[in-house]
Length: 339
Ligand code: ASP
Image (cartoon, rainbow, N blue to C red):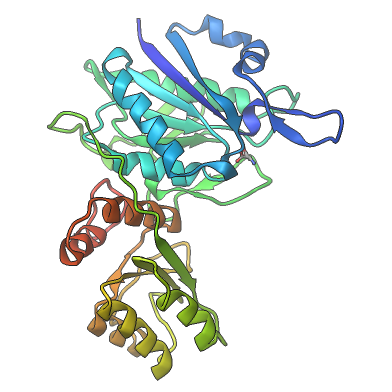
């Protein structure tokens, strides 16, 4: 029988209302099970690993990503697939982080959650959970059909490291603006096999070392030297520059000098766009030519979530600046579009 491990980390899906103050607080897996009697009708062998305590996903961090990845790695041969129940707020970060940590993944790791707790009548949790389990169990010619880390939400399956939380109110909480949806659940589960990662050649390999000493510099018209230099002159090892349009910034000399000075001290700077759709194209406009010349890296069409986690992951590999830079600019888990 198909075996699936459910990893319950927390999130709205399992929350209940605290009667003393009306706030939503995470609760244990038993109440999820009680609210989804359909679980016992599924033709799979389900095991549950529950976090203790369970978390609102705003409290996730690299140590917890590591715990999840280690759990999957240690149980990898025992299960056909893994479903992670997780708060939606930082689900795209965890999905991205897992995709980088689990090299040569050949089985589905599907994250899901919900916008309404499972105990509420109009909840979206049941469909999300049941279909995520179905996707994790799907095989073709004896092989897992989805050999990657994905997010399943509101009838759509997305590549994890291409996903963003897009809406905090609608059931359609996620999108992957720069990559096609990998499956749609209607009357049938329709998989888009052409855009899925290929099954790996090698054995699963786990790397869990993250360096979270990074900074983020989001540009806006009127940004001051003090605001920029608070990041460029700080002790961070790498900087994500969130730029305009296709990767453009002010061409003010003080600004460019601040970046040059950071690069000369060995910091990596990577340029991603504030636009959700489209790609950075350094050198397309005069307002990005100097960035390219001084060695700012292009994040192409990376999401912010994938950039943060990939940068922490790559910096954790302790490579030379040159090798780290090369890795940042190429796709290692299908996270960016560039040859
Ligand atoms: N605050 C919740 C969390 O991320 C929201 C959710 O689960 O959708 O844990």
